[in-house]
Every structure is written in structure tokens, then in C-alpha cells.
Image (cartoon, rainbow over all chains, first blue to last red; front, side):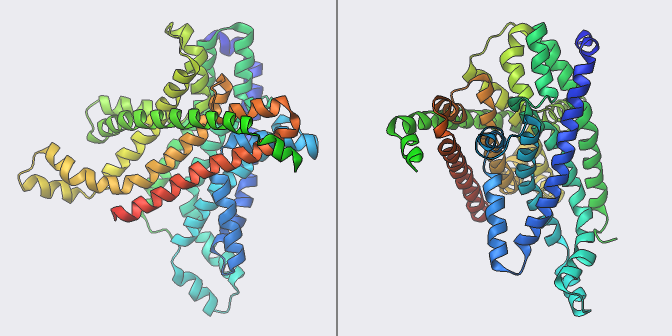
Length: 218
Length: 218
């Protein structure tokens, strides 16, 4: 295992870099899309609510691999040439945004309805009340599950291996095919994945416990 | 339009449904096995046996923080050189999914049991029940109610995740669809549409079922 790490260090590091950048880009993208669809789902306008729910239900119930392969295989054929990394990141973004939308919606709904009413009766518009009063309070509730979504993203980004995305999993398979040392390689790569995911998921568990003890709106 | 009609020929549809059948039975076997293993592990973690619970907890955390794809690769390509065991694709997929899902379910079951109020156990014990009686008749039925929705949504993830086993050539839905559009690129869009619809149908039905179950148990 040590020899795999030392002999292929450069490949593994570039794999880690790709895995992390795909995950970070996808987190950023899915955060934006997720918040938008969460706002749709709780909005007072029925068409927006329906649209939001359809989006969330569709992408929560289709495998990530189907979404990612769609962007890797179908889109280049008919629309525009994109590489595995881009296709995978777009797929990850869309897939994760549905889960983030659910998380953010639950976070917003956990903020007392009186906060919105109070803000509105003080003369704020719906959007002002949402932006300045409700969303800031929801953030604290939403951070631990969002952190867990990032952990999921790092794990899920291994689908890039299907799309020649040069992520850590893809590098692992390249190393396996050149050295034939399957056990050592997968153990080494597993260790690298754990270094990326474990600290964050323990941190999120700690925050969840700590913030659960105190009221959400301080 | 003609592409769709050709793509959904009797022969292709039968081939797709053969894949769907493999997806379903691999998922069902894995979920049953991982429920049993997960229940045992979750219970061990809950009762806090010295050292044992800590080790079990750590192993569960390790598995939960690894990409499923890595576990699939390891079971199929790594096991022969590690333990000298060569699993066929179906067995490797079932073992990998079971290992991964057991860890997920153990965590759900542990927190489900932990969420039942302490007073319940104390009241049952002071009414003369043994620990196991109290656990079986008082705690578990209440915990089960809270565990049903997360367990079913874990089952939904399992059905989706089984598509990853296409990489070890498990003849499931995703793999069969790839074979069909591999023969004729005109069938690409119809096949992706079929994949989306079929996965969505199973997963959506399951999540509706869980909602109905959760309501009835209340």
C-alpha cells in the first residue's frame, strides 16, 4: 500500500485535486439551484410550487449515473462537445441540487412562521423578509446537512470514473491496470477518500449536537 | 419519433425489463441482508458494549465515508487477490451493496432506538419487564415508527445505487440500456428516457409507500 502511495503520488494527488474541484464546483452550483427551488416550493404562487416539487421529485428519484451519462453521451451527440469532467460536474450539480432544495426547504420551514409575519407587518416585502429575516435564521439549521451533502458529493464524484473524468477513482483504475495490485491500490485510494470525508462528517456531527442544544435563533 | 418506435420494439423492451428484474432482485436481496446486519450492528452500537461498540461504530463510519463505487470495485477486483475469493458479478454486487447499506441502516436503527424517551425503558423495567422484553415490546415498536421513512429512503438510494454495478458488468437495467444504445446510436435518447421513467417509477412508488406507511403507523 505504501509503495502504491509513493510510486503513484503525482497521479493520486491530481486525482484528489479533480475530485475536490468537481465536488466544490458542484456544491456551489447545487447550492444556488437548490436555494432557488426551495424558495419555489415554499412560495405563495402555485405554479412555482408545482414546478419546484416536480424538479425535486424527478432528480431525487433518478440515479446520478443516468444523469451524468446523459450529459456525457447524449449532450455531445446533439448539442455541444463537453468533456467528462464538465459532464460529471453538471450531473453532480443537478442531482445534488434536488437534495439541497429539500434540506433548505426543511430549514426555512423550521423557522417560526411568526418571524415572517412580524417582518411583513413591519412593512417588509415577501422577498425582503425572506432575505433579511428568515434565511439568516435557517442557515444555522441547514449547515450540518449541507456539510453532509458535501461529503456525499466527494463520494458521488467517483462517477467521474465512468466518464473519463480523471478523478481519484479513475486514477485508481489506471494504477490497477498498470500494476495489477488491486488490493493495495483500492486500500490506498480508500484512505485518501477517508481523509477527505471523515474529518468533515465528524465535524458536522459535532455541530449538529452542539447546535441542537441551543435555540436556533441566536 | 420513428426512433422512439423502433427503440421500444418488443425485443428491446423485453431486454430492458430483464435488466429491471436484475436491478430489483439484487436490490431486494441486498436490502433484506443489510436490514438484518444493520439491525444487529445498530443494536450493538446502541447498547454500548465496552470496546465492541466503539470498534463497530468506527467501522460503520469508515464504510459510510467511502464511495460505494470503490467498495464495488474492491469486492469484484480486490477480493480475489486479498482473500482468494472470486465472486461473480451478481454476488459481488450484492455483497458490496449489502456492506454499504448495512452501515447506513445501522446508523438509522441506532438513532431510531436512541430517539425513544428514556422514561419508556425505565417505566417498562419498573413494571417488572426484563431488559429484552422492554426492548422488544416497548422500545422497538416505537422506534420502528420513526425508522420507517429513513429506511425506505435508504432503499430508494439502494435501487439507484445498484446502477453503479454496471461497471462490473452486472446485467441490470443501466447495463442493458447501454447495450441497446451501443448497437444503434439513434436509440440513445429513447433509452435514456426509458431509464429515467423506469427508475423514477420504482423510486417514486417506494417513497409514496413510505409516506403512506409512516401515516398509518402514527
